[in-house]
Length: 184
Image (cartoon, rainbow, N blue to C red; front, side, top):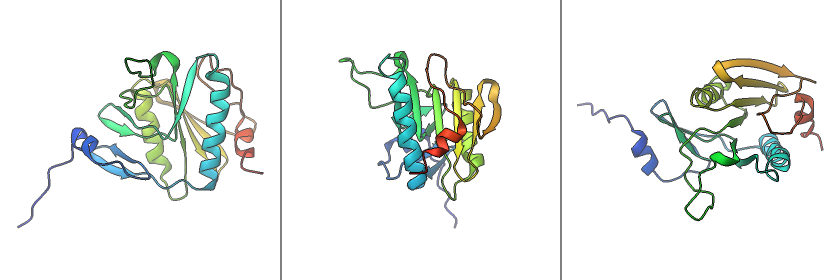
């Protein structure tokens, strides 16, 4: 006799204990993110710092690395989630809330060895479908960035191309500058 377990629901997934690295809930399946390696970690740190430096003092936006975002029936943990200041969930005492039940305004994914670029692109498209203004998919091995824009338009940028950023974020970065951070 074959016993088939019922599919996992979003509510059931949210009751599961946290994992390290984080697990996501995509298309009804639990998917554990890979453990970040050197290039991934360096790019994540430098991008968080660059965006935070220009966006946080002016209360335009705030960066959140590895933040669990629950929206559109899925749980996605972007490598970097950027939220506009006014959209950051807060507690009654105005502290940052622990639960973010909305899409980030800007989602950044960094391709790690062995990861599927198609699956990461799918997560960014899900973000845009649910209100994100922008998505970036960084590919360190190709030194390129896939940019996901509203209406699910996708652009491939490389070398000296300047990357688009959300309006009011006073940041100018080229693809080459970002991947230049990998050389110490």
